[in-house]
Picture 1 (cartoon, helix red, strand yellow):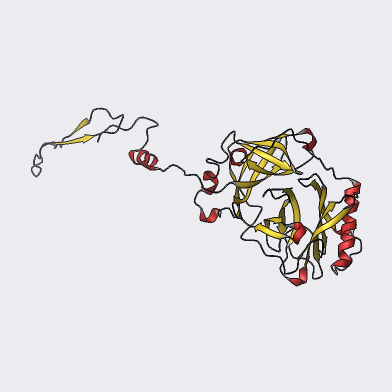
Picture 2: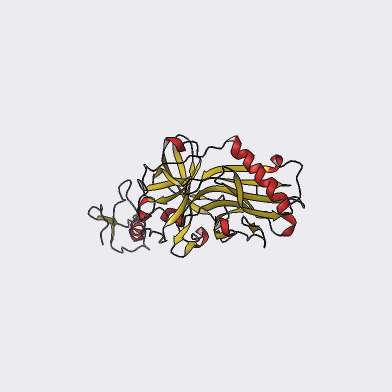
Length: 346
């Protein structure tokens, strides 16, 4: 078959000439070869062209609708990080990149191609939109690596102080929440900061936790939000002999994570606690990322990052008022020790 771009064959005549006076050389005739001219500059080798023609197209990664964490960046941009699949019976893990060929390149297909819209949730309401730019890269901050996207944030004016949001793709929602609903913004005030300390002072003796030199001195993170009924809530992490980092705690170190809700008398009361001692099992020290009523049960689901000795992972915590359940954690995560969770009656 003639390669495209070839001209008429060149006829090469090869003649054998013999100097006169040589007796031991005989005439053997002429030899004719057909040889194509060199390809023009920039032309592809036939084998390369065939390989490109045979390269299969990338196939989308088929999954259930996903829950995402959106994190604010600079100049109105943000990062889109998938957390878990949302199925009828709960949450399921994302595929492992090590076991899914070309996951990073395939993940945006039919999922966050350029212009895809995601609805942002925070403090119990719809508070903005994320518009993907179609890019994808590997995020290795957690033990389960994930494909992550990027794009533009469009936030309500009263949500511009927030840095983290739960999100779902607009097309995955059965009904689109109204952007006109009242957004009960909960600023992080001194009242809420003091309520977190009061909550820890209540739980330390109730749970037989060793007293630190100062409760304020071991508070590592505090966040304020609201539930779907508009009640103010707080989540706080206290760590003694360590920090919210990957690494080995001191032998007597511990972590206390608490959630408090404002009652009818405008007082904050702890409704859930997670207490983990360093000498009682493998390290699992949690910290709050975001919250929303993902399962539409009237109760918040909390997205957490959990720090261990060698890695960190994502987890979804629910059923707080009935003692708390890990609704999901990355497959590489470590289970809390027995008795770590307690509800309001604990």
